[in-house]
Length: 365
Image (tube, one colour):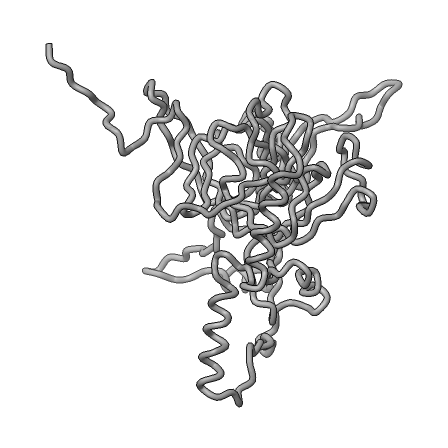
C-alpha cells in the first residue's frame, strides 16, 4: 500500500498547492515504428575522390574533366562521331507500324499542376521529368534470358534495352557495377531499367533519350511504386466505416468486426479485407494523355493526379497498350534523333490554352 502511494506521488507535480498529473502525448503524425539508430561512436566512412598529395593544377584539371563528364549530355567526346553514324543508320533500318514495341523512359515525379483547355475546362496534370536517360546496352532476342519471365506477348521474339538515368560519380560505385557502362561510352548512372522492345526498335548504346521520344497528344502508361504507408488498419487501408462510437461499443471503434461465418464452412475466406501492409506496390496507370512538353528541362505534363509514387520518386513511361489509344501516326522511331532547342518555349496540345496567348478577346459591335 505504501509503495503504491509513493508511486502516485512521484507522478504528480505540485503547483499552487494542488497536484496535477502530467502525461506525455505523442504528436498526431508521429510514427511509432522503430527507427535504426546507430551508436554515437559510429562514424561514417569518408570517401576521397582523389589523393591529398595532388597539386593545385592537377586538382583543377580533375574538376574540369569531371564537369564535362557529369554534365547534362553525359557522353564522352570520343563517342560523338559514332553516335552520328548510328543515328543515320538507325533511321533508315526499319519503318514504324502499330505492332512494334518501342523503348520507354525513366522519369521522376516532380509534382502536380493544373492546365486549362480552350473551352475553359480545368484539368489536373502530373509533371514528369526525364532524368538524363541514355541507352546502356541492347540484348537481342536470342540472347535475352530473363530470370523472371515478364507477361509480354511473343517474348521469345522481343529484345531488351538497358536504359540508365541520372549520372553519378564512379568513385562511389563498385568495379563490377561500373563495368556495365564500359562499352557504352556513358558515365555510370544511378538507376537502371530494362525495356522489352521489338528487334526493329533497337537503339545503339550511348544514344541519349529525351522528352521528344513522346509527342503531345500521345497516350502513355506510367509504372511506379505506390506510397509506402506501413502497417495500417481496415479503416485507412480499405475504407471501412468502423463501429459506433457509443451505445455499449467497447474498444472496437476502428476494428473490422466479424471475419468469418459459422456452420459447415466456418473459416476465413481467402481475400478477406484485413489489416496489413499498405502501399509500396508496383502499379501501372494506363492511357494518360501527354498535354504539354518542355524541351529545355525535359518535362512532360501527363493526365491526372493518380500517378503512382511519392513526389521525387522514379517512374517508368511506356507507349500505351490500350488498343483504342495507341498511336495512329508514326512516333519518332526508334527514338528522337536530333538536338534539343535551347529556347524555353513549350509544346502545347492543340486543345490546351497557352498562357502566353490572350484568353479574352474584344470585338467591335
